[in-house]
Length: 91
Image (cartoon, rainbow, N blue to C red; front, side):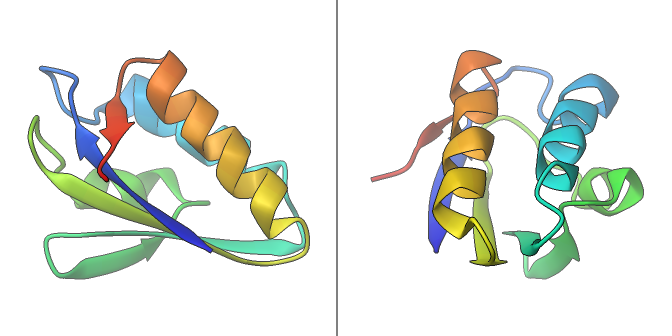
């Protein structure tokens, strides 16, 4: 399962929001969670991986979830992206 978001936060994805995403991803031990942007794919369970994407306002990020509770994990990550004002679903 996957979803693409456009980063809307004027500061992009920096340490605080990256931590919120990583903490949410790590709640789902049976799921593999990846973030892909700028031709780079990293695990969303690593703060350094997320920060290494260098996401800025206007960038697209694709979140991919595989394994146990994939739908639930993707919904939880979507909630973090939208409720924290980080990004919006890119339809």
